[in-house]
Length: 202
Image (cartoon, rainbow, N blue to C red; front, side, top):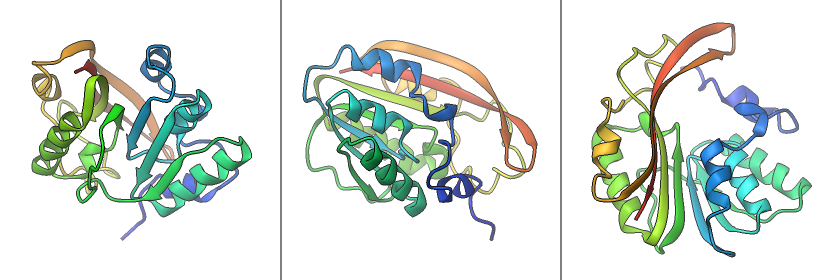
């Protein structure tokens, strides 16, 4: 079985970040201005850390994990070079044990890697462990567009269009976006992802 497409980038420990040249997502930058000092943040499926490192640079208390050992190693390596502190470790989403509440919890482009049953349970756990007036951010792949050939075996639980929004109908939804991401995987494989993104406040 071939290793996931992102591993080559993660293994290049001094190379560029895999996504967005290491820039945090726009909604993460926006939320950073709304969080109180020393806010606690959990970045689930953090990859090589573009969002986690940015948030740690703002002085927040960041916990970040990913199932990829090489991704976490790259995150730790980069954070040490930048002299920022992150509690980073290797962990899968399904068996993560929530032991505290957080001001902000993020899942960005990772929940399609687990089943829908596990995704829905994870969202419930995330909601239950978000403090009052805290935030959740999710960017999920939907089934509006069929995955590319190199992604099909990895996409175990695509959301239906609007499904993630419905799970937050009782929260204050700040951002609700449906869009298509044009992407190119290693080897010149061009394709599109259909994505739902939500920022919600408890």
